[in-house]
Length: 257
Ligand code: FPP
Image (cartoon, rainbow, N blue to C red; front, side, top):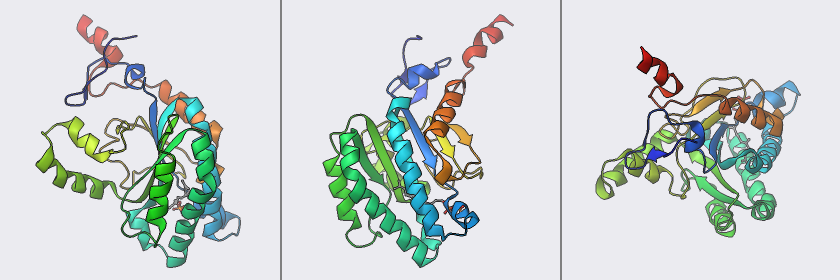
């Protein structure tokens, strides 16, 4: 294996670094779970039924992730722009998230998952923020998987918020700034970003953290996404060469010119 990992002072990887060196702590996989509404509409069901099926897909992925080498899994459950959706849909989503916390917490704890919710908490329905804090406390000792759920989350807002704190508290480095964006004590940088549902955009999700993420866009609607699809995305990721702006494996060819 190539020696050395990242220059941790400024977060800049060394030229020619292999992907395994960077990801020996386990992968950070981030998922935009898109397609719930279309899945439901195609079946003549209300959109909320698609979100319910989407929760089941999330459960499958959370269970499969640690055995596939994932150390951190960030799921985009509700964006700050999703408040623009009809009130009934927003209510259904919030209620599903609440049920998820209630019904899944014991399984998360049993499976060694440490839950952290990222995003704003001050606009959530009454009581939800306390339930989140309780679930985070109860799962704090989990060591198999950092499960991060992005809720009322906007990457631009997160960056703007971190910038106000950065100037006051930290020397100007990529690493220090990145840590402000991932206060849960896990690696902020995304290795692999998956979006289901066929669209090819980032939708204000982990913009800073995905600077060198490998992107995987799949047509599968989120409720149909399963452990096999996650495994396939990770297998494809493992076949890619990550050069981080350097030359990687083509460096010897260039040197020989
Ligand atoms: C996008 O599909 C999906 C959402 C806005 C919600 C995602 C939420 C879940 C899957 C459930 C909660 C998850 C956890 C972790 C408990 P869309 O509704 O925009 O689909 P469409 O593009 O087909 O309309």
